[in-house]
Amino acid sequence: MLKRDDVLQVAKLARLELSDAQVKKFSEQLNSVFELFKKIEKVELDNVEETSQVTGLRNVFKKDEIKCDEQATTCSTDNLLSNIPYREENKIIVPRIIEER
Amino acid sequence: MELLTFSISEVSKMLAEKKITSQELTESIFERIKKVEPKISAFVTLLKKSALKQAKDSDQRRSDGKILSKLDGIPIALKDLLCTKGVETTASSNILKGFVPPYNATVVNLLEQAGAVIVGKTNLDAFAHGSSTENSDFKTTKNPWDTSRVPGGSSGGSAAAVAADECLGAIGTDTGGSIRQPASLCSVVGLKPTYGRVSRYGVIAMASSLDVVGPIAKTTEDAALILEIIAGHDKLDATTLNVPVPKYSENLDKDIKGLKIGIPKEYFATGMDEDVEKVIRDTIEKMKKMGAEIYEISLPHSDYALATYYILQPAEVSSNLSRYDGIKYGFSTLRDNKNQALEDVYFKSRGEGFGAEAKRRIMLGTYVLSAGYYDAYYRKALKLRTLVKNDFERVFDKSANGVDVIVTPVSPTPAFKIGEKSDDPVKMYLSDIYTVPINPAGVPAISTPVGFVSRDGKKLPVGLQIIGPVLGEQIILNVSHQLEQNLSIKDKPEL
Image 1 (cartoon, each protein chain N blue to C red):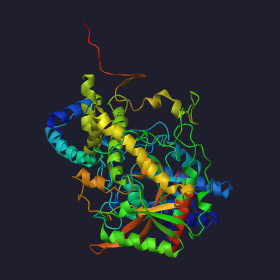
Image 2 (image 1 turned 120 degrees about the horizontal axis):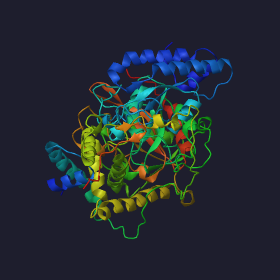
Image 3 (image 1 turned 90 degrees about the vertical axis):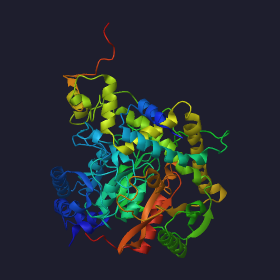
Image 4 (image 1 turned 45 degrees about the vertical axis):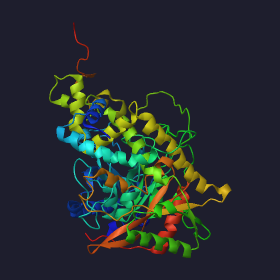
């Protein structure tokens, strides 16, 4: 059973700001989803292998090389940086994370 | 003559015989969009100007005798989950509103190289999270058969656009039924290919080990035509399979005499709408009359498949959506206030930018991956995935007298009312019960229109799911085509 504090803790891990109303609603809804998971609690799975992907492919490599499309838009710095929220010339600005002494 | 009611294969012939031009066709599609789009809301972006240019180029190629493929000059719509260079790509989410990709998804490049005309970008549940398009941060698409009902989802915009003749074919994506379920609810054909058969490069990621891209079309032959263009190995997606792509559309004529069809008893156990069940059972009876052999089979872990899916999928979602941090692209509180602490940018950008369903899935996924719950949920689900996958391998095993295809319903009910399930995530998740087991197993499946049920005096479509073994696209397309020829459903929604 997920409690209010658990929801707040998960939201913190996921870096999500939630309103009080959302915390309340999500507590109820997430608990009802966890009811769906009850089914698997008692299944015996000790000798079963895990499956993360189904292609059977392993260690697929390719050359690490720069390739531009015909109009070179995919190689234009300006184009690639055009969606950055806070930018000065070709620099992406990130808030300071280390304080000065 | 209403051009736009024809299928791709029919129109392709008319173009070849110079009875029409791509420009006329494209114009008529935009006329149709103008007329019906206010009722349907299938599109989030229309690309009339570039589409008409592409149509003009196509007509030029044709008069020069240099057409690129059967899709040359054919108007196609793209789910707005596929990146399009220089064209806003939103995943129908507020957090990606205004995002303009600097590159195309591989599938978009392949369609353009085949000469397709790109009509626009279609609506979806934000980030493909949902079964109704009600989770779109922008608008809800309406079902063309009854506009008070959902078109299904998440590729609901693509399915509705095809059903309403707003394009001749469309691209969707399917993580747990997002191509098949809307196809079923809108009476169009929707194919979820084998995992890795079609490149995911440039497709906004939902759950990367489950996501596939596939066609939604008016006929099976059209779905085959689109699939043979978009399928294949891609260096830019390391999970694509390096296996030759057959000419699917040229091998649909084999009859189904002696075909072994498996009917999984678990899928007919409980919860299915009686009228839907009747349509499905009648269809199976019909396939028997067409010469197929029907066998009852068991997929014993079906009962765990939904839980497995709803653990693995949010786990991968929470990881994939961590990239939306307000720093690199998309909605950000930094745009308006440059003087904030980094953590505040994360919390507030994500808190404001994500809709309710994205948040629920991020939280579910974060929880099942967190210390203390990883073993109880995530690891267990990975193991159950093995059992679900083994179920399918066993029933398809030719050396053990396995079946050729499996047949099930696509959706337990016809299209539901808008608002009926939007506030109850569990109810919504249960509407995927017959489609989600397919994705963890990675096998291909197609939704084929097989009939209608009546609700409030309206006809609502029912689709049949035909499941094949890994890389069995050809056989499910073949069976779907044969069934389609036999049933010959000509009904159209009245709009």
